[in-house]
Length: 391
Image: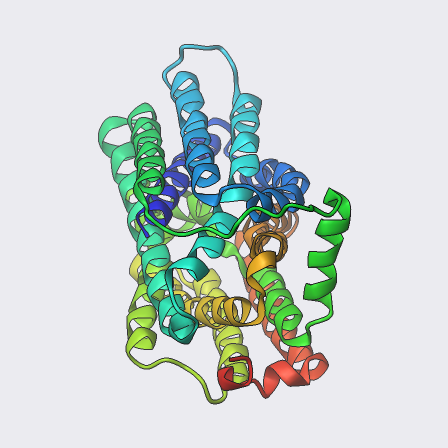
């Protein structure tokens, strides 16, 4: 959990600072979308191989190495923000591309070690606790980043993010956990990756949950436009940006605490679909709001809905995946879900340039509700899911 929260604090601190930095330089919401694209393209290229390495190399040392590499991006951005180099906005995108490569390892390492720490009967409750820690990082990371930008400037915010990544590496090295014995006969790398892909695409419940989350976040991810909303519509400073970026995670923490005490089982599939519909409605409300605190409330409620989705999807993945395939399946999960935020940021930025900020967000919320309806129709086993069926 220490590894997870410090990597999230580092990544989110960089994300909120880069958003402010890029919009300050360009005043163009489409350029905010390019931040997501700069991260997701290398992520897509590296993720399948990252899953293979997690399944075949010592996971703890691999996680510590990835966290150490995560510190490089904010250090590069310190140099850019402090004026030590004449590089412009494209150098920022290049630094973010490195983060995309590193992030491909973080999720698979965490998910693989999660299954080594907890017994199987505790996966449902453990997924809720893991979501609390994850979302706590999403709350405090943007808030810290926004505060540091307003108080000490962008170089200070980037430097603190590098410190958080260093703490994550130390937490991973200090963890005492058993790891599976190395495989004496390893399948060829591409055959091994294809085996993981066949497992996911042949499992209707797992595939349906991943696809639902991916498309919902992709089309409903208005949060990437928060810097533009803050400056053009809500008229707040960087502290307000930190509040907006942290509000969804605060809602997710609240629902995570409740789900840890009241684990889901019956009607888990229907609850998942309803939460995605609620997420779309919250995005519509956020897009139409002109009052800062009302916008923050809509984002808070969207986090409640997204928190339910995260817990259900994480539990499905942990219960349905064999231990020797966790790295590869988690990487595929990352391709579906981890990259959807960045693709959604590019989509939102492009639609904002074509339609304007408000129409782009409202349209995304409507599409999200449509995605939930199509998933309910095309994946009946997911719609009728109870977790006891997977145990």
